[in-house]
Length: 119
Image (cartoon, rainbow, N blue to C red; front, side, top):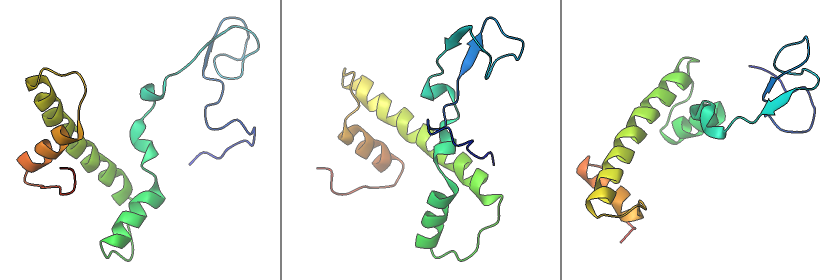
């Protein structure tokens, strides 16, 4: 895992830099900087090891193999893709452009995961 260099400016770095400079992209002097959008980076890395560990602890797990973290991210991605796909289907059927909480509740209910407390 990469460590922060201590610049105090977060994890963003300089982004992609085009133009002059012999060093290439990151860290070159001058040139035009292209800002990278958050969606372009791997969003699943936001599901951190400690977060996965906390979920496992809640489920009663004592020790976790290192391979579990990436597999958990993959399973979570598949689950969210299906829920979001169903939620958007409900939204489109209602001729709306905003996904509501009820769309998500109905999508979860359709998958057999009833969620209470949202109407």
